[in-house]
Length: 124
Image 1 (cartoon, rainbow, N blue to C red):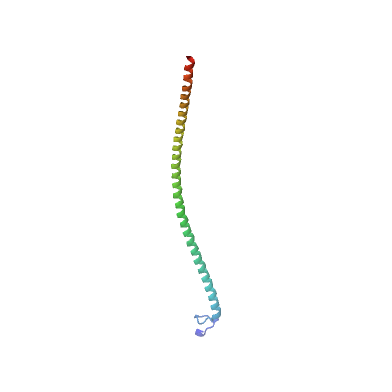
Image 2: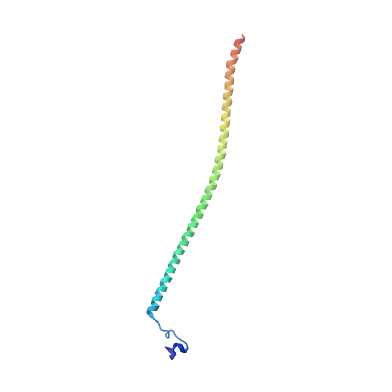
């Protein structure tokens, strides 16, 4: 020990004055190193999980943007289809009405062709 002072007498101590137990310090150091290494591994694992989660969220956001675009395109297409379907429905209604009118006119003409000659024949 330096300056021939013992622990109880005061004075300045150097690192040589403190008794060391190599086996105890080495064991404590290796346990501490193991704990530090475990913490570092867990931190690296948590960092990797966070990166993976962020990438997943980014991909999900891109997918949502794509879905939103597809949804708006589908809404536009459905409106166009509805307009086209209404136009076709009106065209078919007019075609049906024309056919009915032609049928009614045909029946009237047929009745006139049958009734007029019979009325004329009964008067003579």
